[in-house]
Length: 459
Image 1 (tube, rainbow, N blue to C red):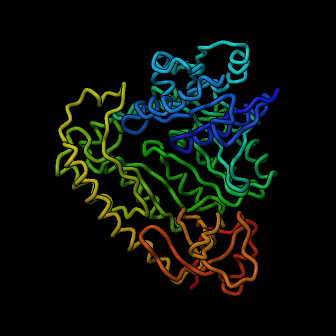
Image 2 (tube, rainbow, N blue to C red):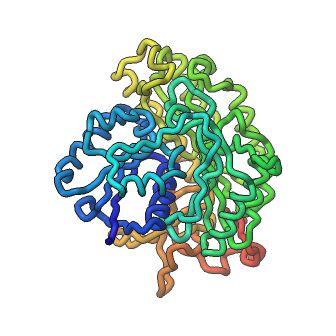
Image 3 (tube, rainbow, N blue to C red):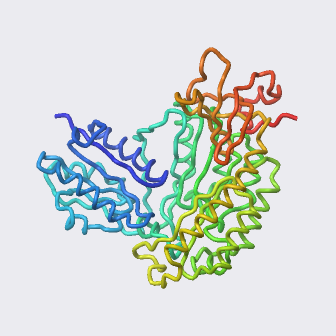
C-alpha cells in the first residue's frame, strides 16, 4: 500500500535541513511526500521554540489539524517544541501519535515501524547527554544547487535567554571524514554552494582530532566543483583569527561572516551569560576588518533584556555604528521556558522594547544605505536564484550574501544556479540593482580561475 506524508516546517536553517533529512529518511522507508495534509496518511509538524509563545502557536496549529483525525490520519510533532513539551503534547492533543526531538531523528525508521504497527504514543525524547548525531545519506535536498551540511548539533553555552541547550541537547560534532565525504558527494551531484550549519558552528571539535573549524572550512572550500562555502551560526567565544585567514586564503569561502553580538553592553552580556565583553567582541571585528578581502558582517541583537538601561541600549546602537554591519536581525526579548532569564524581573516594558527596536532598525537602515552604496559601479559575481516576473529582473546573491537583482541584454536568461558577473547600478538599503556585465568588463585573471573570488572590483 502507498504511504504518504506531509511535513510543515518552522524555524531556522537547522530546522529546514533537519526536515530535508527527515524527508529523505521517510522516502527511504517507502513513504511518498505530498503537498497538503488532506492527501497525507502521516502529518508531521517540525517546530521551533525560539520565538515568543512558540508552544501556543504549535497547539493552535494542532487544533487546526484536529479536523482530520476522523479520517484515519496519524500525526507527529517534531523539533524543539516537541522536546520542550514532551508528553504534555499527548495530553493537550490526544490525536498525536508521535513526539520526537531532533536528537532522536536517527531512530526515526524504528519509530515509523512502531507507528505502522498501531502504537499511539511514541516518543523520541533523548536526554541532552547523547553523543549521537543525525548522519544520513538519505537527505532530500530542496535546492539542487545550494545545500546544507550540519557539522555540529546541540549547544553547551546556556545563555540565560536561550532554550536551545534544553531542546537540542549537548554540543556534539560529526567526524571530519563524514563531513568531507558528504561535501564531496554533494559536489559530485552538482551542488556548488555549501553552507555548514551548527548552533555554534565554529566550536566544531572533530571526534577524530584531525581538524578544527577553520581547517574543515578550508577543506570543504578546496573540494573541486564547490564555488561557495558559507557557515552559520558562529559564537564570538570560538571565533578565531584562523577563520579570517582561511577566508583570505581559500577563494571559495564566502566573504561574509554572521557573528551574533546580542548586546553592545558588557553589563547586559554578563547578564545574558554570553561569556565575552564588548571589547572582546570588537577585537574579533578588528580581525575581520584587517582581512585582505572585503568581508561583510551581519549580527543578531536582542533589545529589552531584563535590566537593560537606556545607557545599555545606547551602547548597542553605538556598537552598530562602530562595527558597520551589512545587516542586523533584531528582536525584542521574550522569556523562554526553562531558561534562567525567566526568573529575572521584567524591567523593560513592551512599549519601551518596541521603541528601542525601532530606534535600532532606523539607525541600522542608515548604516546599510551607506555600506550598500559602496558597491555602485563595481562588477560582482552573483549566483542566480530565480526570476521576478513583475519587475522583469533576475534574482542573484553575492558572495557577501547580498541580494542583487539585475537585468540582462542577453537573448537567453541565465540558468538558476549559474554564476554571472553583474555591474551594480543602484543600491537600496537591503539590496542591490544591476545589469549583467560582459566578459570584457571582468579582469581576465578572474575569468581563468576555476573557483573565482566572489567579489570582483574594477579599478
